[in-house]
Amino acid sequence: MQKKILAAIGTIAFVSSATFAFAQQLSAPEQAMVSYIKANEQASNDLLKQLVEINSGTRNLEGVRTVGKIISGQLTDLGFKTQWIPMDEVKRAGVLVAEHPCPEPGKCGKRMLLIGHMDTVFEKDSPFQTYTVNGHIATGPGTNDMKGGLVIMLYALKAMQAANVLKQTEITIVLSGDEEAHGEPASISRRDMIAAAKHSDVALEFEGTPRVDGVYYGSVSRRSSITWHLKATGETGHSSGIFSDSKGYGAIYEVARILDTFRTQLPEKYLTYNVGLVLGGTTVDVGSEGISGSATGKDNVISPTAYASGDIRTISNDQSDRVEAKMKAIVAQHLPKTNATIEFGEGYPAMAPTEDSRALLKILNGANKSLGFTEMPELDPMKRGAGDISFVAEYLPGLAGIGATGDGAHAPGETVDLSAQPINTERDALLMYRLSRVDAKADLKTLKSGKEAK
Figure 1 (cartoon, rainbow, N blue to C red):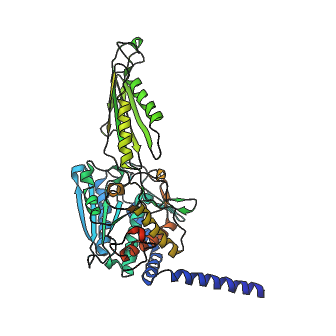
Figure 2 (figure 1 turned 45 degrees about the vertical axis):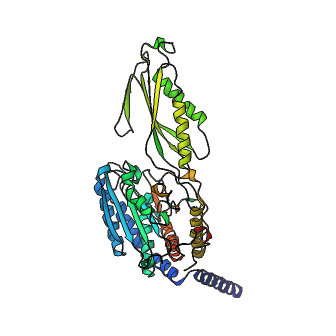
Figure 3 (figure 1 turned 90 degrees about the vertical axis):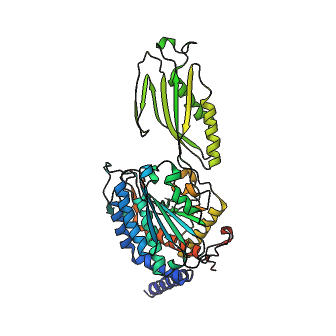
């Protein structure tokens, strides 16, 4: 019995010393932030429930605006000046811009641009509309992508305010209402985000924080998402004339040739190219949204028209340009008596990895170490899709996903891990605080953890 008591005392002493060592790694404001986040976990979850229960599918403009009003109110309470910018000209709900100027210009460390979106892929006619909680898993539309991330952003800022350090920051927040299907042209729908990037030093995107086998990952790059549309024509007539000098190969064979040549000649690292829709026959009618269509044809008639569409995803804009040029060259090698053209949509540009973005991840990992969390390795860009941060990647370095952690984004049954919410909130609060404390002119690559105060 005495041995058991001594062992228990030893265990308590070890835990106490470990807790003391942990506290020693955090400054007083950082300890205050962590305490605030832990104490307000339920309030954070309540806000998440409120946001998820508002349908804000991209085309539900009023729903997106309602989410924006709630977030705007939260940010106003934190001292931000907010502005709702309508996007009627691109048939979208709008953009929420919030600014927190530095009270002493040049003395608030790095100027931060926080990026997120208020819309989801689940429109009003989706059967997936309900928010439920089972243990620490919450299920609902947009829980992971990305209303959980919006809540993390807000509560990280609230924690900074509670620790009396938010006042000494320079932060611009831009939340789009159409990330899942951005309005075109992007020169309008992403105008305010790009403008904010030009007077910021770093970008932090509150999209999902990936976790694989218990390991959280940091993202310093995102691949592009660019649509392509292929149209082919050919001679028509009785099927007995197919492949003849007078009739040639028909439009469907021309499309088949092009797609198979894409398959065999395009492969390279970090590139994917998908075919999402194929139509061909005597007549082809593609819907206005480009996601549906119809065709008519007869087995004994050579098809005079065909259509295909899909996307390409690349790691850099240079790769996009190179691949598009190769695709155009393939399309131009027509089969006899056929013709074809390919057009590329605006899409999302790429966010290529940079050393400055990797330096940001090192600063985030400095926060992880101080909090007693494990280091976050760099995520393979093949494992996530495109995002808004790519529109500003040419102007400043960034982290492309420091938000919620969950599963099943974009699919009915999407979930968020509520137990991960405070973890992600704590590391984000420390990251932003430390960025606000470094020399505003310091090279990110020279900073080890971000704790170097001015």
